[in-house]
Image (cartoon, rainbow, N blue to C red):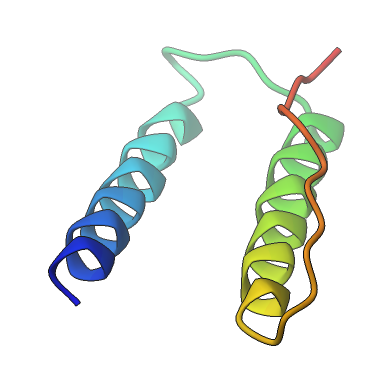
Length: 65
């Protein structure tokens, strides 16, 4: 329970930090980049949820390239 809480809070903080990249005056990105980022995050959340049902799937690391 303690580890799950700590990791969940850490993941949420990292997602909040990712929101800082939305600042157009500091970062350059395209609509396609946004779709890739959120598509990847949604897929990873789905993969983790499936592990709780006994289904294991590991897709690898994210890249915008």
